[in-house]
Amino acid sequence: LVNEIIEVINGCLKNDRKAQFRLYEYCFDHMMGICIRYEKDQDSALEILNLSFIKVLKKLDTYNPEYSFTPWFKRITVNEAIDAYRKKRRHSEVFNRDADEIENLTVVHNGAESTDWIENEYLEHLMESLKEDEKAVFNLYAIDGYAHKEIAESLGISERTSIRHLASARKKLQAQLSTNEFGMKKA
Image (cartoon, rainbow, N blue to C red):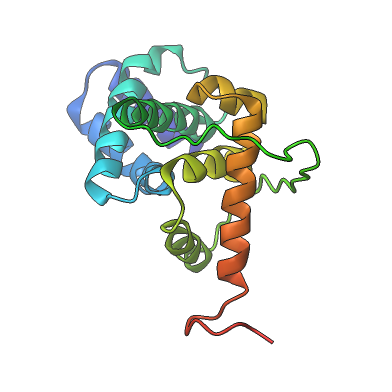
């Protein structure tokens, strides 16, 4: 598979349209999974994916084949999702800048991605209830492994605001997890 990817990448570097399509097919599921975590709307997620793929093609000459290709294109996709988030945020005032009792907040970080499709679908369903800012911070911290400092710099917010959004998202998700699908509290 590694040799096949290198062959496809070499074809893309020569502007071979078939190779570009093969690379798009190879990346699509993983990239779309990332995009859908950041966008509730399927069309917006697809737009982010396509913009990400264009960047992947433009920057392909900077890719070092000594390293795995997947984390490289994942980073580009996450950055594109962050850019889309910033654009949305500029058009609306979504941040509540009140920061109370943040110093005593402890968070648990689990940077591992779920590989189980059902778990991913369930997580996406749960995350639909989050505000955009909470969803962005939760994705960046809990799923993509960013530190609060990196999140703050990427989203143009303070570290304290990042921590607050993560805490709020975790609280909402935990509340949903403690309720079964019928809205009844688990015993």
